[in-house]
Length: 161
Image 1: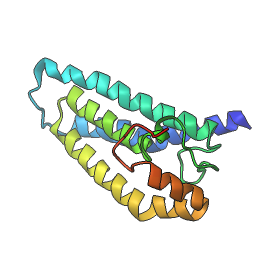
Image 2: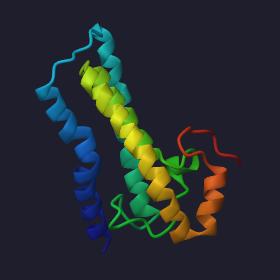
Image 3: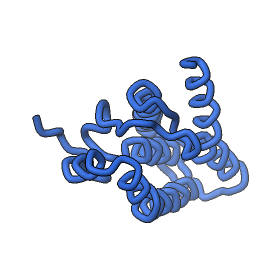
């Protein structure tokens, strides 16, 4: 059963964040110009990208290990995940994707990847506020309400003890 959960996680990772972080940026990079003149400073994007991807993978791991589900809406966690990065911010997976996109935009010196990151950020916010948070309130009730009061939606902060 555990192997099936991890296979589903890998599949949904390639489809969902993979589209946002890999497939669309690859298409944008091959179809557009819009290069920024960052020089050697573009290499700052590499550690930023690594931090973003690392955060994403950590969240996916916690979804499986703690929440007993995947990042896909069709196979969500069965429990509110409050550990790991979810102690500091309610949406670390989305935030990690945005950090990784910022790293890609810097690394590849691409104005159009910055535009893509802005579009993704707006889409994430609208999705979270209009659909995801109300659905989580209905699914998990009081535990999610308490979590929402204790942890910021987008700005990470040190958890209270």
